[in-house]
Structure formats: C-alpha cells, structure tokens
Length: 327
Ligand code: GA4
Image 1: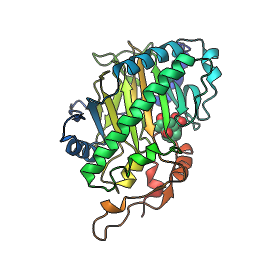
Image 2 (image 1 turned 60 degrees about the vertical axis):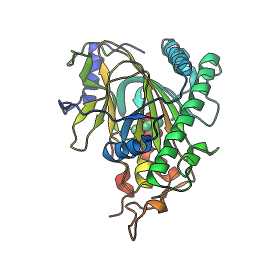
Image 3 (image 1 turned 45 degrees about the horizontal axis):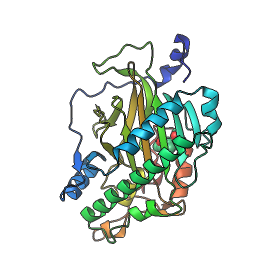
Image 4 (image 1 turned 90 degrees about the horizontal axis):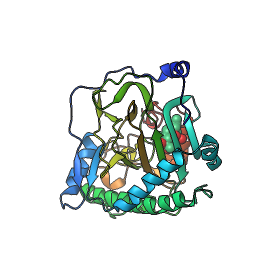
C-alpha cells in the first residue's frame, strides 16, 4: 500500500462520511448453527436486518488462520508484485479504486472468481490456502441456505443452495486490506475513524455474502431508519449478509443490508468475503412457493447476467434494485 501524503488525503474529501454513526447499540443477531432452532433465528434476522453472525460454523480454524497469514504476506509485498495478479477488470488486485465509476476507498483488495483457478501462479501457498477456505465456506453458505429454505418451508430444500453448487455459479471471492489511515483523528475509543471511508456504503448484488475479518473494527450496517451501527469484530465467527438477489427471491421479505467499512487509524483490518451468486443465465424472481394467494411479484423479470451488468454500470452507493421494481 502506498502511504499517501497530506494533500493526497485531501482528495479523499469526497468519501468523507456525512451522517454520524448511531449512538444506539443494537445487538447483532447471533445464530448457533448447531442448534435445532437456528432456522427460526435465521429467518427473523433476515427479515429484520438482513444480517447476522454465525457460530459453530464448521469451518476449520486452521483454514482461516492460514488464509489470513497468506493474505497478510501478499499485501505486504511491493505494489508491482501484487499487480502481477492482474488489473481489477473486475478481477485482480485493486488499490483504492472500487468498480469503474469513480468510487474510491482506503482499501486494497484482491477480487477473484471461485469457479476458475485464480491468477495466482506466483503465489502457490496463497492459492492453496484460498482453495481450502473457499470450499469450506461455500459448504457453510449452502448449509445456511438449506436451513433458510427449511424455515421458509421451501421445497426442495436445496432450491437456493443449488445455485451456489452449480458448476456455472457466478460466485466471487474478495480479500480486503484496510491499512491504518494516517493523519486523521480517531473519533472512537476503538480507533475507528468516522472521517474517511474504507469501503463505501452499498448492498451486495448476489444471493448471500459470508464475511470473516480479523479483530479490527470498521464494519457498519445500516438500520431501516438510516442510522449506522458498528459491528463488533469477532475473528472466530462469520457474518452473513442477505444480497439483493435473495431479497428478490423472497419478494422483499428478506432485506438486502446496506453496509460500509470505516477506516481505523491504529490497526490494519483484513476481511475475506465469499459472495455466493447464481449462474449468469439464472432467472432471478420470487420463489413460487413463497407467493401467497394472488400475491404479485414486486420485481420485473431479469437474469443474473442482466442484474450484474446493471450493477457494474452503477455507483457503489446506488440503489440497484430500484430499476427492477414494478411501479
Ligand atoms: C459490491 C459487492 C462485491 O464486493 C462486488 C463489488 C463490485 C466490485 O468491487 O467490482 C462492485 C460492487 C460490488 C457493486 C456495484 C459495482 C460493482 C463495485 C461497483 C461500484 C465484487 C460485487 O459483486 O458488487
């Protein structure tokens, strides 16, 4: 990561946060995947917040630690070496620029597809660690989607998870490194900056996102009233986001959660996120078994390809689903 001088930080004025974070603390829903009632907790959390934390997830700690140390090693390399993984178009190594429409953040990242071998020929141990981790996290994501299907009384049980299991599944993996942001006064006791954004507010376009981070704070989620709450970091757990596609598949019953990451002036933050997406040709529409009586779809018909294309033409903070809502 190139350390920016003071004038360069000024350029970040366009990504300064304008609303204060909510002082109210709301508990993040906690789901214990080993408990028989987890399906009810998942449904409640997806309806109320579109976000929850999971414990007893079954992902071996050694896979998590190994990937974290490989990723840390990767981000500490000179810029030119990191760039050998390719420009982020959209896959590869990126630095500060997010997407192609002018969004910036205090972050460097590696963005990969999960269904083809990542372009990491020079980083064999990183590639192997990614392989083990992704396989295990995908399994957990599918278990969550199956438990969700149970809770929603959707038949068959794999109606959602089969989209991630499909060979053509358009899933993405992202590793984000947020270096400590210099020269900005910390506003909170935990070192979180309220001033410069690490990753701007957005919702995830896919079905489900599974995030794990180190013990550095920064992630915030937005409540319905527009206030932001900080998510206390927990390196032993995973955080699950409902994506836009799942909001559509449940005809708006589940909420795709708006989230963002604030920079930290003291500690680096490292997060790794699996974005479970369907095949490009998949029609994204409310699941018939969730439609009661003469209930109508809130959305126009579209394929994942169409939604993805539209997402890549949008700015990070845009409401992407609005173009697909029925008037
Ligand atoms: C948000 C979720 C994932 O990180 C991502 C992002 C993607 C990118 O960084 O290339 C996008 C963003 C994300 C949504 C709008 C577009 C596309 C950046 C951007 C401005 C990989 C994804 O699938 O959508």
